[in-house]
Length: 320
Image 1 (cartoon, rainbow, N blue to C red):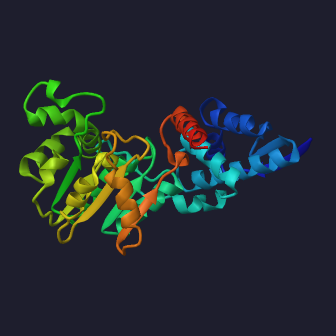
Image 2 (tube, rainbow, N blue to C red):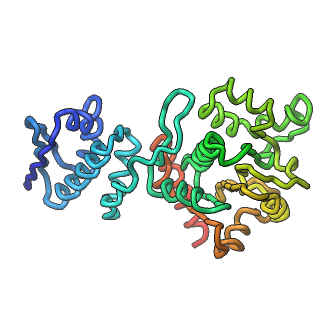
Image 3 (cartoon, rainbow, N blue to C red):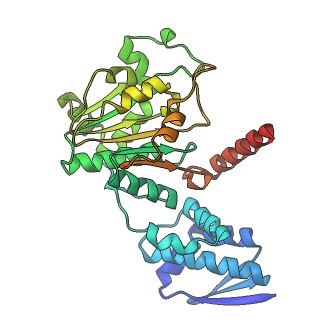
């Protein structure tokens, strides 16, 4: 049995570290099969030497987040544990403090993983950013947050959000209403993100003025989009022709973000994804960045991460 003592400077930091009902420390104990006991301002970690060393590194990583003003959650505790596995927990200090924007309810929007941080930096520094990765990695939400920030700072005059209305096993023709009402369900995730950032009233006001536009990809043809922040979501469901059409809409003083999950392509058999092709063709062009997320960047429920891993293993087994 090996023991390690960690001193915590402030009592409130120790409270944050343990979490409600000690859930954060319990996660560490289960991960490394160690015991963590609080004695005043000291933590005693006991167990096998290697396990204690990893648990110590994880606790120091979590204290780094707390010292930078971050609130611990099940997701970022899980993320710190994954960084410890890779020996990369020293990179945590670079993750803190980057608030992209404040939502309508006053909640700060920040990158929660190193992959998300890299994505946000890529959007800041490049005119076109392609972001590909599994569900729950914040591709769309962070892109909308960056668009709202640019719009509020008057760096662009309007926000344009679009996605292809590809039928995922359902037929558009059977949906009630006119064309706009038929495609609205496909655009709902974009509306949700904008409502969250701006509030429903402000969103409606900006939409009436034409400052914010949410439309199917087909509506982009023939246009030149100047002074705009343009987001193409679900881009894995574009054909190569649609992707080329979209990218060539870029006007002066504009930014484009293209997001998609290449494991969820709903195109008819024989059709190649425009996102996959664009990532290959454009990867070496200056001012265009290609970002790839992994299951480590998933910031939803931990089961989402496990589901993604299980599907990846299944696909790998099929290929072999």
